[in-house]
Length: 249
Ligand code: PGA
Image (cartoon, rainbow, N blue to C red):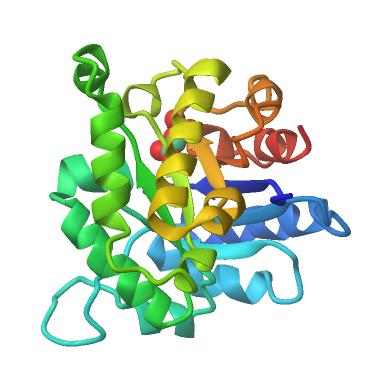
């Protein structure tokens, strides 16, 4: 049984002070809450301050992006060991905004994944089709390519540290959630790919979150589906009350 994971992706929102205030309130809300894995991904500027607030809390810290090299002449970039040093346990890799706005490919996703694993940071690999791809019935081909190429050359041991987030691009920030049935169909398909690539244990044991306009109102019906193990939440994670409502669905 996979413990439900509820992860907040704040994107480019919140100052350090706002991030600290949110984290303090969230940590209080999550005291004693053992039946959920709660993760927040603040902007890089707030990671260190938030890591200090979350010490001793069950809430886990994630970064939103990183470079695959350890160090070097990469102006503006942050490496996996730097994130580990700041106390990050998770990293979002291949979010659709990174893919469409910043040229991330399945190949760079894979490089980042390898680097994160090397430094003990658990990757949350984001996959998802665009509206155009869905309408042209390319969804399953696209998802298969993103999963297979993104997870290329990962050992069966390392796959245990990896989670997947299925985020249909047309559902992100649009208010259009995938129906639970549609999401479940893709989640089941991802699980089949994991099984055939990494063995049955990986197929059964890998957490697959859904992302795209998740709210306190729709989380329950999504989580009712057997292959949906959690949610990656953008807009509705920016407010503590709304995010807590999702955590306590
Ligand atoms: P949303 O974003 O919840 O605002 O749709 C989800 C995401 O981009 O991870």
